[in-house]
Length: 78
Image (cartoon, rainbow, N blue to C red; front, side, top):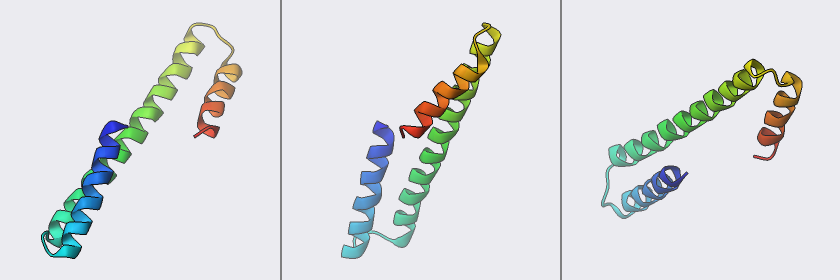
């Protein structure tokens, strides 16, 4: 999450510098692209983690519905 916070700040700074005339549109778009790519990668990593956890619990013989309910609880709290 630290990287996402840093990229949000970078995007805001680039936007303000663009407004002040110190940055170009390309700089602002590059900052936005980095932020969007990082958010996508973070969401994908979370998905893979949760799916892998459910598979591992299933292979360990744990109740799959309990595992799915647990993951749903995590997703609902976001």
